[in-house]
Length: 435
Image (cartoon, rainbow, N blue to C red; front, side):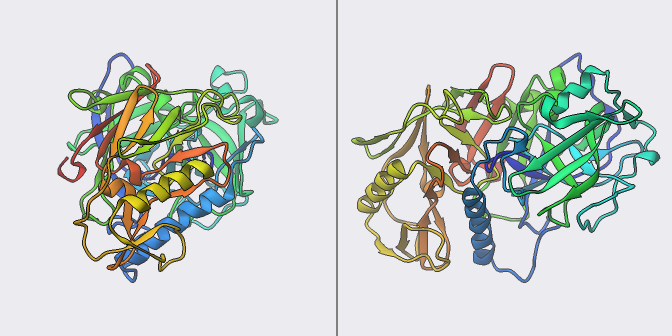
């Protein structure tokens, strides 16, 4: 999994039969289903909309409170993640599973039979002996290095083993192997990626949800899904997130390859930086945030954790987290700029809340100034409705001033494109419900 920050998507793994080779770029789109949507296995029909919003904020704050672990052997993340769901499959014949995917993670793993010590899982576990395309990786194979020097070992029969621990003491250990990974596209085309490196976990425990079977990494490491897709998707993926509660039957979209291009009028791009400590992060450089035309708050350029960068983009974190001084000035200026009365958050999570029963109120010009990319935020990116009478600022102070997070509310109604080959992330305003 990824740092207490990470683009995080839950995968329902399904059938697929069309093989995608790495000799050409291909494009396809899959569904992203919010974990609280009626399409989600985590959906609780007894919860109303505002309770789901409160739970989403609670998860985001829990990840922030968990903090970043700087031990490189551990993945620095609070691991009960997975704000979005998508469909995939493993093996031949394809076996349906559910897994959490994270842009800050670089290993794909699932619980496997026989399981020596596993957390409770509601769905059946993947049995590698029933897949005709499953094969273990030899310790002498270059693929074994995908797990990272600190996370691999060899069995008594010289087969590659992986071991990963998370900041909340959760862990997964097992065989590193190759098998076919498939996805069901929104066009009805089934795509398959043969010989994908996966972790087959036989010892997994911690705070994992019973509805999920493992983790799928979309980060920058060599074992991540996007990296392993290779030239078949030209190192590109993008997503478009709909407003919270806009229509929980309408799915968000995750695009790969040529479908993931973000270009044209209004598109802006910023470089991706690689942290020496956390190489899987999509780390960016945020130069300043602004409210109105004159109130500009500059952000410290460097981070001891992220190096040249100072913020991580993460679709799995709901709130945007800023250094304490920047957040305080930013929040106070917004509070003084909108004609709404301050009030308390009924859930007691957020500090800057305002009384209003309508969304028809004037907002100042608010922007995030990334290196090379000025991203203007709109009402739904800045304020979240937590009750019929209250909206709250969807920003918070980072528990660790050395690491900031660009969360998913700030990304709503933007087409956000990741280009690993050119090491850039692009933003373009869009109507994600209509896409």
